[in-house]
Length: 131
Image 1 (cartoon, rainbow, N blue to C red):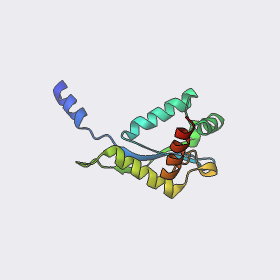
Image 2 (image 1 turned 45 degrees about the vertical axis):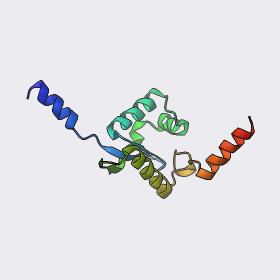
Image 3 (image 1 turned 90 degrees about the horizontal axis):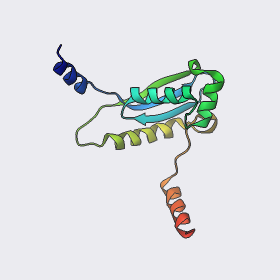
Image 4 (image 1 turned 180 degrees about the vertical axis):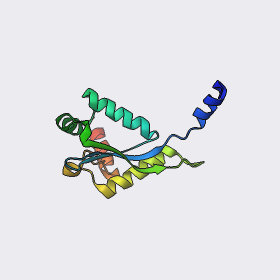
């Protein structure tokens, strides 16, 4: 195969996107997220955790205490790209459904509960009134 064919093949390679979880095999807690590139997001999380610089401090603390071999990186749902749809919006919608279904908050997980629309509006109003 020549260089041109290799480049074309690389561009045509499907990059899996979807919903993932990082599962603590010791206590069952999970972090659920979404990405346009599942392989890339797994690498990013592993790199940050191994470097001790993950933004989720609870997950980082458990990783430090238990070691990386006590965690599983899993795909919950893959999303197939479709024409005329915004993949990012689709992923956010799917992630919200998974968060609602699994409720990975507090003792069950590492996610933080997202603000509802009403809570966001109240926060904006309070910020505006405070100025």
